[in-house]
Length: 110
Image (cartoon, rainbow, N blue to C red; front, side, top):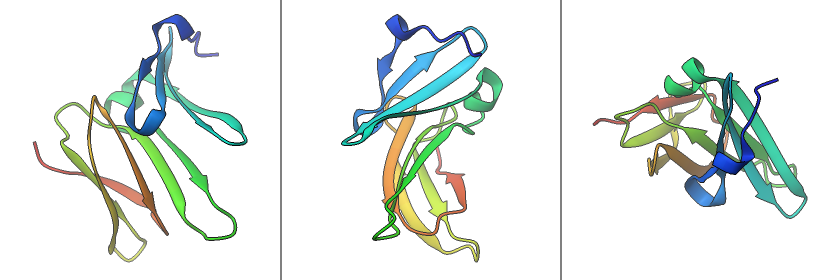
């Protein structure tokens, strides 16, 4: 659907891969169980709306790996009541963090 170009993949935060496509961008994350992937349109990814989340069923902890909008230096994860539940530095337009109960990602300053 996105016409991904695996040969053009590049490393992202925390061992993830960013994979461009004709119609969008995908983020792939590997763990002990295999590889998961999330894709979006190019425009959505450029707005920082591409995220891959894995939740540990036993602990409730979440591993978030995402694409950051150009100019973002860090991201903050917020809970439903606006509490900060995680932060991460943006490296090569991507970030990764472990958190709990995140419902929104907010950009950090340039």
